[in-house]
Image 1 (cartoon, one colour):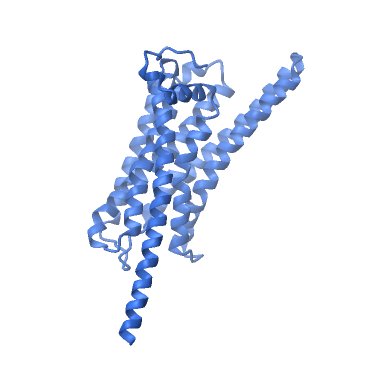
Image 2: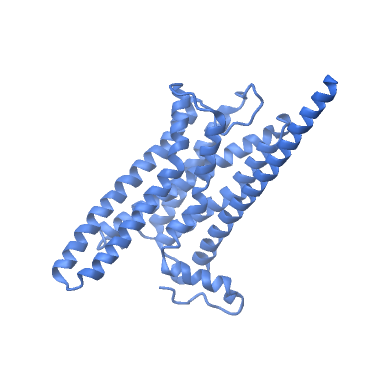
Length: 314
């Protein structure tokens, strides 16, 4: 009778685990598809249309590539590891997930930082913008946005070898000295730079709007444009900080052991951070008229009907 009861309990547990696995699979598949599809539209638009070959759009292209790879590599690996009950068969996959996770997420954040620097010179120093931010400078920033994360990901992954979790679970992070130091360079410094730059942009944009209102009789139109710019910048900062701040703060608290944070909560914070890769195309591309026009042409299949690479999208 006791044996039967145990079998019933095990069967119920397995059934619950299976249902959870199915639900997780659907969520991961949907999120991955949205991330890949949104960022793929950005990549096709910037690569195909010659008018979009500019330093700013090259930075957006690099951001889209890193975000697309987050959806194509990191999320599927994480789903497989979450549903797998065999640690030893997933050890290599766990290390690969960790390497790609640090590399791609950090690259995405640094690309956001580079875009904010580009926007700073475009708004605050428009007369010298073309000299300070050209294609060569843009490509150098892209290289840095990928090289530094690669070095960081390699260092943290190599340091984590031999420091397996006694519970045989593939954790979303290891609270080592390297991982905490890495989070400073991967998030806190870029976040401070992004926040400072966008606040500076808002101040300068408001001054420019007041100057235009005093010299041109179009105060209502200027006010509307300024309101839209303020809203866009607020969304830029808000989405980035909301998505990534909880996870990186939880890492700091976990290391300091001041607050006991459950692993499941840290995992939820990590998934919220990954969702930033889905929102980036909306924030950085859907606000642009050229992107909406490019997406319309891509969806309509016009790219297969002839050469539209020189189309005026602006």
